[in-house]
Length: 79
Length: 328
Image 1 (cartoon, chains in turn cyan, orange):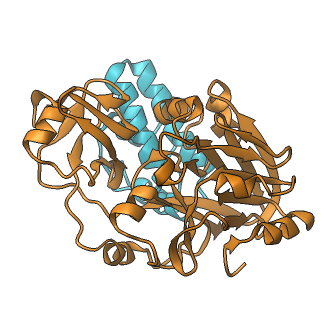
Image 2 (tube, helix red, strand yellow):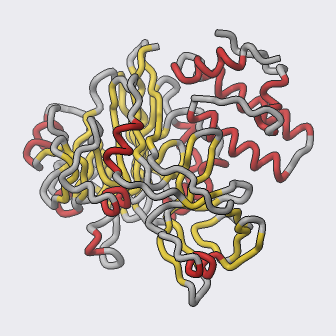
């Protein structure tokens, strides 16, 4: 299981909705919905970067949880 | 503890032993509990080992002992509640109780997803309530067991640090699925709505619900990336053109009215995951208790208070919220 780098496009793609990947970690699902609402109101690149980093940090802090680990196995295969 | 429903004397004995407890019970019975390391909230409905029950004498006890390294009690008000995720233990979880209809309840319900570090740490809990025969007459309260204080506003929280090698994982179990009706979207966040976009058309929602004879015992359901999150109807006033909800609706989220459920317990049991592990806390919604007639019925191994709202990171409705302890 590898945590994609903070600069990996997967984090931006998830918070903008450009990519939808079936996730299991409930916290991530709730946070992504929240971050998409933020992006809906403010789509500037700086906001996108801040939202992407917040999602990255959520997974970094919870990487040991079974559901987060299963998500990271999927995210680790994304380009 | 094989039976989570205890008497005041049994709870007092646990407190004397120095245990950390999260309690649920009728106000009169919680007022008899001696001071100690506990928090509590009012509600006389529970899911006990023998099934759903309404009792003015019993106290539902969540014992915070197994896998627990330390417990710290904290109190918040409507202004400070935005710190609840920041204050959570790094390797643990937080268990919170808020009285229904209080300023703290409203602030948390509407604002939680925007609070600093939202969802970064597991926050589970419930909204305290009253006996349904006392709606509008009695106030829900929470208790700080350290002082015995009862409060009709504020949040009481246990920030729990887990033992090494353990982690908390939060989940919800929601039997409701989106129905085949039109998508419903709102123009502003809130507990009530007048206008909404239904199938893309701007309508008065109360009138639309009334015209279409929508069964408002069934919630609105939103899709949170595959997890279904409910918002329950509190009232529909077609004359005044106002719909009130038990949890806020949010702009940018598309809702659909839920599909009817033939039998709650059967649907519930079909959804219980196999790898559930040890459940440290769970609570279920008063509307499930009421509409699905859960009195005397068991919901698998889940016990806990029956609540006026469930907290699983944020406020949810008509849902069972539960917290599992995992080996990591």
